[in-house]
Length: 113
Image: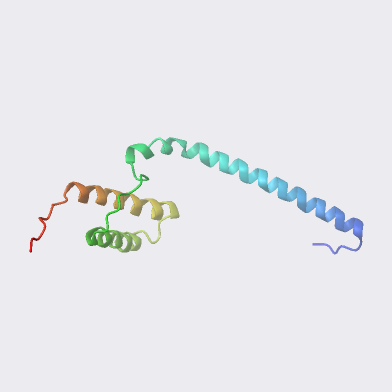
């Protein structure tokens, strides 16, 4: 980097930096658009997988224990995996386990006093 000696050089450097910022923003926008285009086929799978739907309020100890178990076990196994894998695999496993627990739920009769 060269030393700025006068006002004209300062103005020229500012214009250079501003044009550099504009170029970088265009590069980022192009990269985001490309990523959106590549991920578009996966967006059609979301309704099928049903993993982003609003969850029912269920505060069972079994669900909490399962969630913690998945986080601990899968977290250790995927320590060297990419960030997308570390994000999606536990989410999918938690969705599957909650569906399994919902279908296998046993109704406990109320205790009468």
